[in-house]
Structures are given as structure tokens and as C-alpha cells.
Image 1 (cartoon, rainbow, N blue to C red):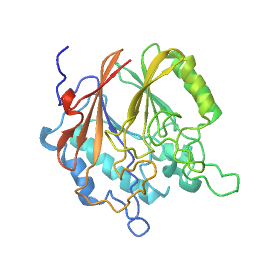
Image 2: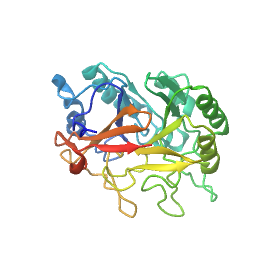
Image 3: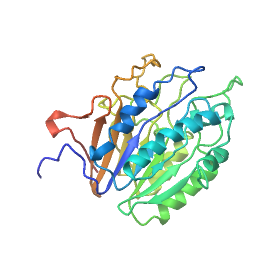
Length: 306
């Protein structure tokens, strides 16, 4: 097989954006300040980058503290991206979007013009299944579990039905990764960064061979980190787990998250290409530097084999 091209094709490709977490400057030192977001949007101007036919997909945490004024700011970023490329930008709910339950998941969905937090989009080459989070819950001591990502029982039943009825390969997008997959899914006994309840979620995936990939954000895992992209075996078959990192910032487990990110600092997004049912290609774009990143031994392309 020939070496893959470092520039992704437009066909059978989706563009993934990690956590944006735009916020009010007076309450939070957001790194998606104007100069930084301009780097992202301007990189798509004048045909500089391929426009994926599968559109742009967020992976949750569009905002930081669940406030409508933050929604307006996030919508402005996504609208500029859509206007520059002519492709839809699909929102996905994260724990920060419903921070302290300041808006319910259904209110969030309606604000973004969606029928529900969970929905599907048939791209032709795959069925995209967005698994929405339920309301935030409290810790055993009664304090808010602001980092928790809980999937309701009704949503799991819905996911099981979608996978059974799909009749094609499915890529699932959920803000949080599955347990024991992506680096950073377990940051200690008080910070659980995987989707919950983990065992029922794993059972639904195990029961449905159409589930080919689980795409996530949430952990802010730096691109290029071991297990930021990984293949795991479940019920005798391989499944891809792809983390979209974080546009707002990144950090490894044990590191303090730096919220005061300079507008020149690295900011990666991912292009994921469906080559065939057994092979995906993933490319990183560093919008801050305007270059393609990735393993140099593979022409800057990460290959996932199922």
C-alpha cells in the first residue's frame, strides 16, 4: 500500500474540534480569546484547507459555565467556521454546557436547534450517532459533580436501538471517552473522566458490531499522546477510540491545566477519514502554526486498523 498523503482528502472525512469552553472574560480566563479563535477560522479561508464532506463535529464543552451569553459566543465561532467552509458544524453536549444544571440537556438542544441532545446524522459512509449527556448529579457528599458525564438509561436504550437498526458502520460521538481507553480517563478517585455508567455502556457496545468508533473530547489529552487514539478489543472485535483533544488547552494526567493559554500556542483539530471498514486515517492540523502534525514515519498520518 502506498504511503498516505499528509493532506486529508475531502471525501469520506469529518473534522473534529475538541473542547472550546468559551467563557466570559470577567469570570474566566478563556484561551479562546479573539486572536486565538481567529487562527482557527482564518486557517480555512481561501481554500487553504480541504473541506470535509462529512462536516465539522464538536465533541462537547462549547462553553464553560452553562450561561446563555456564552452560548452566543460559541455560536459565533461555529458560525464563522460554517460560513468559511459551507459545511455544517454539529454541536455536541458536554458537562460544562450544563454546568450546575444552569440549563437542562433538552434546553441546550433546543437552543442549538436540535430535537434532542442525542441524534443521528447519516453521512453515507458512516452513521454518526451523538450520545447526549443527562443532567449533572451530585457527589456522595452532596457537592456538585461538575466533571461527571452521565448517560441516562433511556439514552442507552436509544443508542442500542440505533446501532441495531443502522445497517452500516457507526461512529459514536460522546463528550467523555469509554472507560480504560483514552489517556486521562481516570485522573484519580475523585475525578472520573469517562462516560458513566461505564458497564452498561460497554455492554451496549459489545452487543452491537456496527459500533466501530467512539469519538470523544473531555480529557484535554494532547494530540500525539500514547492512547489519545487507540484500538481496543470488545466482544472479540476491534473498535477505534479517538480523542479530539482540547482547543481551549491540553494537559496530561497529573498536570495542572493551564487556563492562561497564549494565542500563539498549539491548537490542534483532527481530520478522520473512512478509507474502508477496516482502515481509518487521522491527521492533526495545528491551526496556531498553520501546519500538519503527526508521526513523521507515516507521512504525518495516524492509521487505525480494525
